[in-house]
Structures are given as C-alpha cells and as structure tokens.
Image 1 (tube, rainbow, N blue to C red):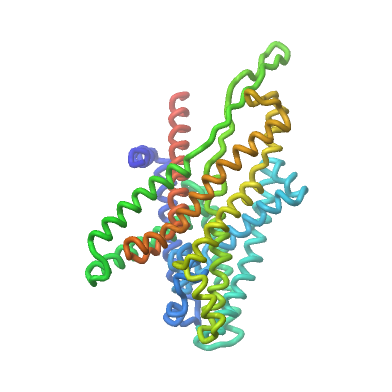
Image 2: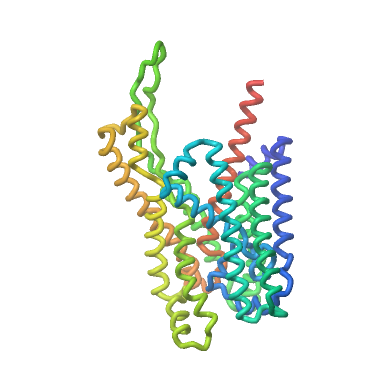
Amino acid sequence: MLQTLRNAWKLEDLRKRIIFTLLMFLVFRLGAHIPVPGVDAELLKKLLGTGTIFGFFDVISGGAFKRFTIFAMGIMPYINASIIMQLLTVVIPSLERLAKEGLDGRKKIIQYTRYGTVILSMIQAIGMSILLARQGVYIKPGLLNHVVTVISLTTGTMFLMWLGELITERGIGNGISLLIFAGIVSRLPAGAVTLYQYITGGTTNIFSVFLFGLIAVGVIAAVVAMQEGQRRIPVQYTKRVVGRRVYGGQSTHIPLRVNQAGVIPVIFAMSILLFPQTLASWFPQNRVAQTIVHLFDPRSALYMVLYALLIIFFTYFYTAVTFNPQEVAENIKKYGGFIPGLRPGRPTAEYIERILARVTLAGAIFLAFIALLPNLMMVITGINVYFGGTSLLIVVGVALETMKQLEAQLLLRHYQGFLK
C-alpha cells in the first residue's frame, strides 16, 4: 500500500488528485465544527447516549451530531435515498429499463437520487427538530428555531453530497464513501486519548490493552480476507464463426463475493433495534420505557440474538434483491456459454442459486460476528469500544476500494507511457 502511494505521488496528475481529496477532507472537518444556531450543545451531549440510534449517526458524521453542527445528519440521507432507488429499480420496470440504458440512464437515476436526498433530508431534519425541542435543547424555543434547524441540516447534507461528487470527479475513489471514512477515522485520536485515560486512571491495565490490540489486528485481517473472498464459478463459451472470424472459445468465471451485501444488513439491523431504545430513552420515568431500555441493552443476550438474526435475514434479502441468478443464467445462455457439467438455462440458474445461498450464509454469519464483536470485546477486555463492527467494515471496505482505484490509475498511466 505504501509503495502504491509513493508511486502515485510521483505522478503529477495523481498527486493533484490526492491533494484535492485531502483538501476536501479539511473542508468536511471544518464544517463538522460549525454549530446550528440556537441549540444548547452541552445539554444535547448529556441527552445522547452511545446506545441510541443518534449515537450511530454521531459515529458516521465524525462527531458532528453530538456537537449538532450543520453536518449533524452527515451523508446518511443520501445513502438511504441510494438504497431506496436501488430497491425500486428492481421493483419498478421503467426504472429497471432506465438503469440498462447506459450512461444516460444512470445520470437520470443519479438525478432522482438527489431529489430523494432533499426530501429525506427535510423529513429527517423536521423530525429531529421536533424531537429535540421536546427535550428542551433549544435555547429560545419557537418556530424560528425549527425553521433555522431544518434549513441548516438540509443544506449541510446537500453540501456534503456535492462535496462527495466533487471528490469522485476530481479526486481519488468514491467521494461519498470517503467522507464516511473520514468521519469515522476522525474519532480515532479521541479514542486513543480515552484509552490513555483508562490506563492512567486505573480503569484498565496494559495487558487488557495489549489483548485488545491483538484482537483488533486479527479482526482487521479477517475483514480484509472476507471482503476480498470470492467463490468463482467456471464458465466456458463455445466458439462462434461470424464471417471469417472466430469468436468465443475462452474460459471465464462468475465471481460470487462472500460479502455480497456489504455493510447494508448491519445498518438495517442496527436501525431497527436501536429505534425502540431511542424512543424509550426519552421517557426515563416510565416503567414500560425502562423495561424496553433493559431488554434492548446492547450487552443483553436478547439484543445479541435478535441482532444476529436480523443481520442474517437482511443479508439474504439484500443479496436476493441485487443479484438475480435467473438473469445471469439467461445472459450466459444468450452468449453461448455454459457451466461445465450443466445444461444452460434453468439447471444453471438453480446451481448458481444453490451456491449463492451457501456463500451468503458464510458472509451473513461473518457479518453477525463482526457486528457483535465490540460487545464481546467489552466483556473480555473490559474496554468500552466505540469503534464498532459497522465502522470497521466501512473503513476496511473503503480503504481497499480506494487502493484498487489508485492501482488502476497507475496501471492505466503505465500503459499510456508504454504506448507513447
């Protein structure tokens, strides 16, 4: 990785792209410290707990939510809009045809995603403003405070969306993913300071920290292996004679990724489980609310079991939505291909579906393990882990994808120089 970065830095074009990306990170971090007017940030910090859905928003936004800055909602509305559009593309035939129209179709879908981001941002900002007003967070409650909050939060999210698209166009890697990456990584220095305070205060010892480090390194290695893991199904294409030319005849494969759904199932499962606890935390004197908080405690057995089951369910659900074995089998048959030992068409689709179910199960169990690992590490080492499994998956996935894009840029320029 270091060698790739050194080689990229030597090329002027790539060096400019890397510098531009770093400058956009700086803009992102500066915006994460501009507060929304009229909000008591200190009171909000006391109300927010790491076990609520707002705690997850705070991790994704790099601490901007806890300070209630203009970037408090982060880029989550855009991610939600993208997921909704992806699901609608499978359900609505007109959107499916649009997605297959090439560059023009993708541009229209991106435009629809932007409109959806504006709508979701406004809805989320209005709901957040009303809920926080009930907690007495506003210094001077009134309609003007609600209007200012909604405009500030919606504008902040749209600015981040524009910033992410700018990084994608002029920088290195996927801009939206890199902004989430920057937000999560920005919390590492504060986590290191907290760990140092635990050691000096006697809350934990050096052995626990060392054990924590060993487990963290092993988990990162496992995440990298699973992110890169594939089950390759061999495909053979027959030779075709068109005029005087012979086409086909080569062997290839269908790469089925072990972690086909990425981090989406973890986000879905976490949102569902944290929502009841978040609502219950606003009624601390109510006995039913206290029971809900106790049942949905992240360290409770019920929470862990439900969390794991929901992750497995959403992994299968999202994989089924985004990967269609019948369509893959039809495309193979259309271009004269076949899987050795199987007839084209339905037998091929059933075989791919069977292999996909087994691979998805391994990926789902791994996602559930990674998501529950911070709770287990808290029990083993006694260290309160703020850097959760979701954050780890996002950071590792984005880092790997960015390095691949950087290597592709280097390879492209190498071949260009060779041809010249």
